[in-house]
Length: 342
Image 1 (cartoon, rainbow, N blue to C red):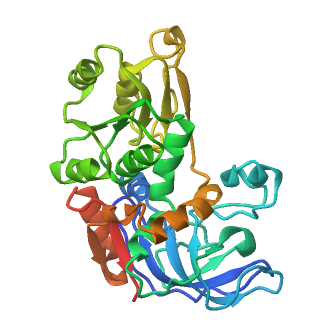
Image 2 (image 1 turned 30 degrees about the horizontal axis):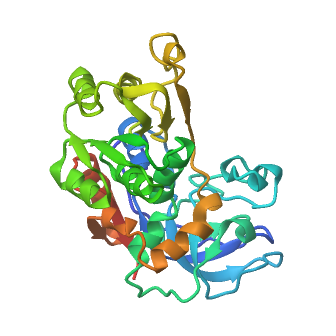
């Protein structure tokens, strides 16, 4: 990406092993993330393109001399950040704060919307999926475990979703729909999805939403209050990242409830005072999802069909068509676009 709206496909040198802890992965599927649209709107022009993409599944082509627990030919999932899986923060389940970790998008790491990728800290980052190959029908759902589904799951976990709770999800994008599915898995009694795109909210109902609220702002707040007998929602999962969504969240949360944010905030200052949070004993939580912490428990759920989060993909393109994938997602023509390297 060279500037807002300027995405190009270029041929660059193949990645290679730079550190003995690296792996090289041949990409089978990647995708465009909703968070990729933030720089698509705002990136200032630059002379060197910014490598894009942070989600992939693929096959290991090469391994550094210090990589353990993996073999060439393994089919693997790559979380959207890399981590050693051994440091103090990884051991506490916060892999996105790994002392040896990082993300993609630099000249050194490249981007994952590419045919090949260098994966630092491969032993801790990559998770092999036995019995799956690049022709499996499960590829879309496995790909969601690199980010989008487990980001929605993280929202629900941080929001303390459990049986008997009423959950409201703000946003009908792929993360919001994933949060609906995750809330159902965690036993929420009622799930209210706030979104106004029928094709998306229909999928939300399939994922477990019991109610859909299309209204926004004050009107949307009043609708949720009406649905909850004036009490508000025990848990609000905010999957948008813009201030109006946050304001909507504290307008509908129940006293003593939880707001969990996983939409990347496009603002710095969020009201936390008497009228918004403090006066009602509301907890504000959320953050960058430590996908690596959840992967082992999620993979069997995909393999046995318990969850099918890959339904969020409604379009597939080849690498040369990635610029149009950005446009389609930005124009709301597509919910989430998968990149097929098969």
